[in-house]
Image (cartoon, rainbow, N blue to C red; front, side, top):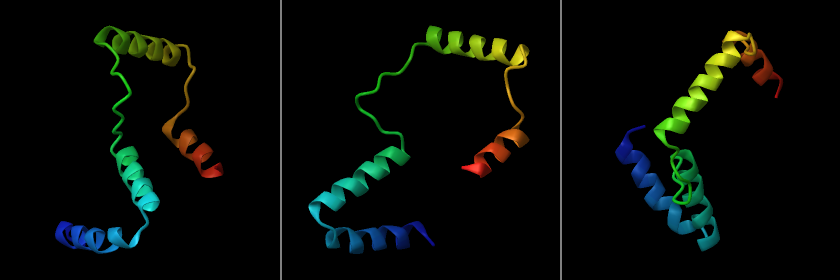
Length: 76
């Protein structure tokens, strides 16, 4: 489906929704795009600290493989 076709369908369906439903759709779109005006970005120092901590956990063997993670997710 082309971008133009998608936009057309959204334009056609959106007016059929109640205002409350339109707000929900908008919030879902924002969520998909990770739009959060209230969240604050972390500093580079905090980012690097979190990376260092993650590397230490991995070096201690406190991690799982991608394959095992997929198995766990499949159980959900």
